[in-house]
Length: 284
Image (cartoon, rainbow, N blue to C red; front, side, top):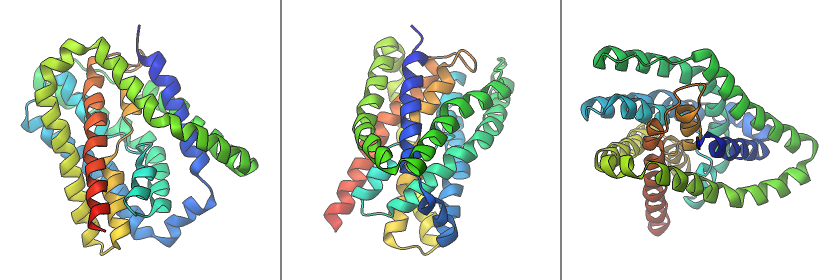
């Protein structure tokens, strides 16, 4: 069974959930805190893919994992980032704004970046990697933008219903991602175990480098501690479900193996950022 049929409903629910979080306040945040929004967006859209590319190149990852690692770095907007920001005493409104903006901006940036990466990998390894940009764009609009828009409309026209749905779905987000990870682990146990060491190093290095660079970026902007924590979390947390959907989709790469870096990233991301949150809370 192609796991895309499990990924699709999970991704639809996560993006709809994000939409129910959004209201006018989320977008007026852009006007209120333009420097913070710009810094966070730069970290998500530009910094993280560059770091992933550098790590994949330095570790000489095989083509399928090279593309998979950069792919997850190009999918910002982790569904749990708002909760992590709240636990870390960050700026939750900024977190929601950055998640929404990155989810929209990547409709354009992701096909552009990944087409360049696919071409680079093809030239370096004498293999043909074709990225159907048009199909990728359509899939992202259907699976990301459309459910998010439906969630926004529900929040606008039926705010009370949106809050109730948000509470229910919010409890399902993390278990759904873990179910997705479990299904992929069962399907690709051999490949994961054989490559866990190198991909674990790559994913850990990506998360830690993203957190460090985003921290330095936010300190350069002289933001408050809460804003800095939010930017670190937003840059570190990725939409693994989106990366898995793109990698395993029959319309795009049709490769479950390419989704393995996203699975490993999702697991390590939650562990590392939970430790980060625990450190922040203990520090007071």
